[in-house]
Length: 449
Ligand code: GLU
Image (tube, rainbow, N blue to C red):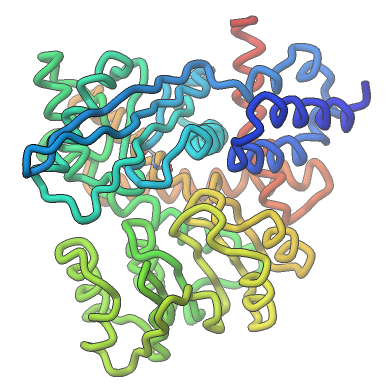
């Protein structure tokens, strides 16, 4: 069978087996399409049915999470852990608490995570977990009881050498603390079973900043290839979560100008750009007060608020989607291109729709997929695991230096693979092939398991 036909048949089979899993189809289709050249070049991958195995999770854990609210009423949510691939290391990936969480969304994220983790160069397999529980609007006690109930089941499936969860949407240091504490209580073990822990109980410095910082390091590498840099460039960000805020912080540190960002309520257009005072206000607003961006425009008169809008209408040189999947559509991409965008670097997982990506690539906009550009978070999680194993803590400088090195290596791997397969500048192809190769070769070496 020809490679193209093989890939088409595989994709059809995926759709036939789970017709409702649209997000997983989208992620699988993007990867399969770009792997065609490597499958053509080396017949062993088809011979050993590597891809057929790779699109099936090694294990899916699906459980009930009952918990009581502050009034004593009982609620039930769904809990999941998708242990996708452990060929190159223990399962690793975040936990997401959000009402949109389904088996399909977590399968897509765990599949992506497998390639992302491979790209870091660290020994990390791919996984993702979560629940359709939404921490927004819940009291601290409710969030804690939910985390404990979630852990009452999950604890038996994870371990520092088996599966090491971390945070994701809706799961930050607070939730990790509650889950880690409950794991410790049930198992009577103090081990590095989570990453993203508080610094006083084994968390790595720079872990909260790592994804955002890494995104900007990656963008800087991309721009370097064009003899450019982030300094002096106008940037916009979507999402003001952990990734968005730290992307803004690093852009600022590197001399760029952040003129637009948005949250659930709408977009802020601040032509004068963020400065240290505004960033400090934003961090307090988002991380401490958990408030709306409307407060930002009340305080800073240089800024306009655009209710219900995302940042994409704001003219910029660089755009950083850091919120969630499919947040940047073809229409948004057209607006960005018409306004002269030169680089789009994904801080979230799969935030650009396939049509948007096609447009960027056809118009010569530099485009980096999340699995390469946002790998800094899980990379520092890998460094946290190392620190836990050797029972030492590294300084901020040490961790940031290593993060920068990892992001540079990921960038080089993408560029090299894209060149090897005659698609220079195609970071999507480069990332998929580089991520795939390491996992696929390990699977072949380990036999049919
Ligand atoms: N949730 C993050 C990601 O998408 C971090 C995962 C981790 O640190 O394990 O990569």
